[in-house]
Structures are given as structure tokens and as C-alpha cells.
Image 1 (cartoon, helix red, strand yellow):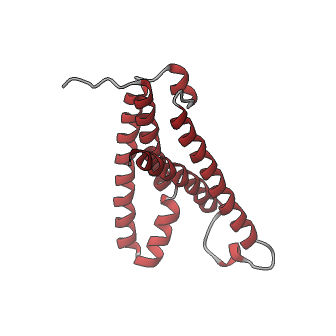
Image 2 (tube, rainbow, N blue to C red):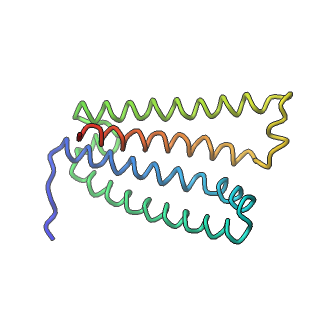
Image 3 (spheres, one colour):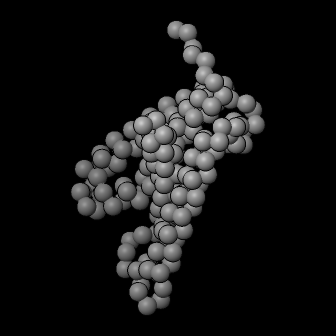
Length: 160
């Protein structure tokens, strides 16, 4: 099967799209421990473990696929663009910048929410079964999800 050659802007956009999918799947992998522990509490140990296993396997398959496709599309890009996530096309650079800002805003809102709920008077952390690595994983997965979803939606909005 013959591989299709893309222009620099098309290769950058395809790379950006697959890195967005990669980021979404990374968010599911990062939140896996948190989601698994809550699913086991809500659904029972057997059902929660089965659901967590299915979601984890699906996230890993999407992660491997999107990473391989992103690297394959990245080979059509210039080295500077590929290694440093800088894009020659203005639209792709704007999509990337908006996505970074959205991820930062989402992670800061989550961090502020956790900070507000965990003050001495509320005892939120003490009353829940959440551990510190659950909260950190929640913040990181929120940032990855916001980054990936904003890339995917902005690229789809651009094609309409």
C-alpha cells in the first residue's frame, strides 16, 4: 500500500490531531486508579474491576494507535516542528496555543477547587477516601483531557 504524502500544513494538522487523541487516552490512563477505586466502591469489586480493565485496555489501544499515527505523520513535518511542537502553519499554531491555555485553565480550576475544599474547616480530604496521588492524577488527567478535547474540537470546527 502506497503511503500518502501530505503538505507541511496537512502533516502538522494530522500530527496535532493524533497528539490530541493521544492526550485524551493519557487522561484515561492517568485517572485509571482513581476511577477504578471509585468503580469498585460503587459497583462492587468484581464489576468495578472488570469495567476498569475494559476501560484501561481501550485507553491503551487508543494510546498506542494515536502515538504510532502521530509519529508517522510527524515524519512528514520539519524537524523543528516535530521536536518542539512549533508549527509553521498559523492555524495549527493557534489551535495548539488555545489548547495549551485551555489545559492550563482547567488544571488551575481543579487545583483551586481542591485547595478550597481541603481547608481546615471543611475536612474534605479527611472525610473522603481520596489519597494525594488520586488528586494529583485528577488534576493531570483533567489537563490532558482539556488539551486533547480542545485540539480535536478545534480541528473539527476548522473543517466545517
